[in-house]
Length: 170
Image (tube, rainbow, N blue to C red; front, top):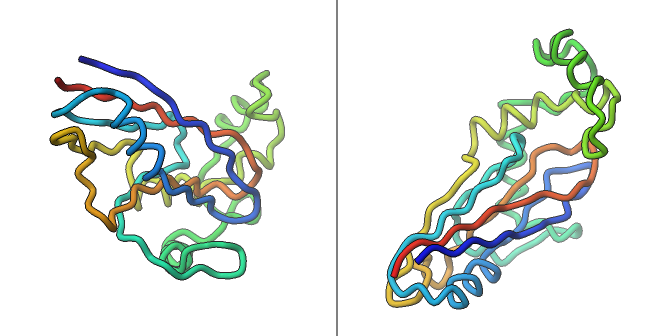
């Protein structure tokens, strides 16, 4: 049996946007009817990552999990926020010409939209655009404290992000 589903998320502007997917994934696993199999989640967005981590109970005044704040601080040391053109080699003139030629409302034809090289680096270094999880006896095998997080590293603007879910098994 193969089941497909999607999760749509709204990200925020100004800082990395973290989303706990646990409740949605557990619900999808139960609704799928698959007893034993695999759930794979993917995103087509190149500035985003998935990761698996323990439930951390403390949050700051913005509602950001303390572990996510720590991750952000560590990643800033590796790839500081891009604040101006020329800070990184990318984007180059050919990519800027391509980006400003698009007529997609999700990607405004503005040069500043491409000042997100730090987000691409963080996504490439930190995480992956997919995650596979095991279903056994009808339950997602992530433990009682396990969380699957989606993070959009691109801080430039808020937007809608898509997660594709496929569940395969019997």
